[in-house]
Length: 80
Image (cartoon, rainbow, N blue to C red):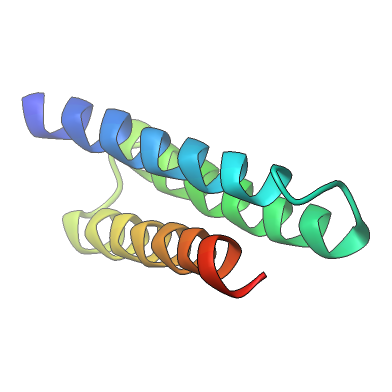
């Protein structure tokens, strides 16, 4: 139970940081598409935890969400 709560908090914070970096560059169509991707990834990961899906599905969604968040943070920090 405690690890699920930590996963929700950590993954949501990482998604929030990614959203902040995305929105720091404006609100064009490209940024809104990036924002939609990161929001959906975070929502799917949190929903899988709260719906008590299989552990493998939850783990894979959390990893996918974390990788997408880090990728978009790096992309918006150094590239764009």
